[in-house]
Length: 425
Ligand code: AMP
Image (cartoon, rainbow, N blue to C red; front, side):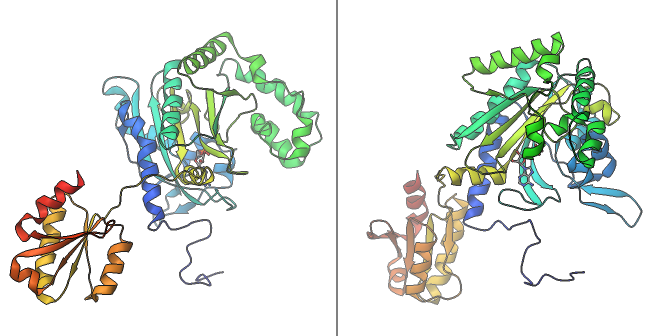
């Protein structure tokens, strides 16, 4: 048993720390992915990082990789079985039911969330054991416009970041009317193939997942497999066509992908995935779909719903793959460099006043010499350095140096805050 990592400072396998300056990009991506949701009436929800194991085994599905292999579970001292959340939808729906949000007024209840998720997967580029998602759920309405809305909002989010090389894969998984017959037809087809024992077991529990098998030897045998498209009932067909028409009208291009199944059992009808071609094998930057039966699966009333989750980590990687640099404003706009003890006190006061006026300001802490302090000022990304020595203080001024042009001028102490606030607007 490893008691302590070999390198005492190493983060656990499959995780990484977000540190400046990269963390600023990460935050900006989170903001950008959430912004279209806020504009579309989605309210923010936060749920615990762990839930009862049962929520996921009933909701996400006992036969899925996520539940059967990838969940971090723990038993509390009191004997309660908990799991670190592997995904957001089941938790959000549970919380909505607990708080009776679906009874409070208008349906659908539209919610968005942002947080960390945990899956015990084999780590590789773009696949982590701790990752970050922005998600959206629209609970309690069956309306193709809602499915279309969510897809459009995700596209708008990606576009606002400057991403271009992403594609939308779209499918319908049918509903409780038409899926059982399709499932049986697929099982008949699959049982006749040459497959290993584990895959054979999967045919009996969740045959649709076999279509998702990435192995070439399996994929080869799947040509000719019955497609759900040919088994959809009239209501599902009509619903799906409506979603397609609405997306097309919104100028959204998508690809029909009859093999798109997704790794969670709760999906019905519309399912979609956003893939980015610059990411190698972990190409899904986001995905989602309709889950009309999930509420009942976890013990609630019938609440047809639809939602998605976008991976923040992979969106950052996709931006990098496309060479997109986000224009992030410098956090520090002014950097104060005191020359001598008296100036230290005066400038420290000015720093506080500038911050209170909304100007991002930092200070040369630690009694650095002028040269070092100016280096720090340059590194901070600040546009202006604020310098003051004994003589300046005697004259009641400070020096404001424009670090881009090198120009420097004296500004009266009591005018500095106004002057620098004005400079930024
Ligand atoms: P899923 O719930 O599996 O559909 O995941 C939704 C999105 O979360 C995916 O499209 C990925 O962008 C992201 N994601 C899922 N699992 C991981 C992981 N292990 N590491 C990084 N991102 C992930």
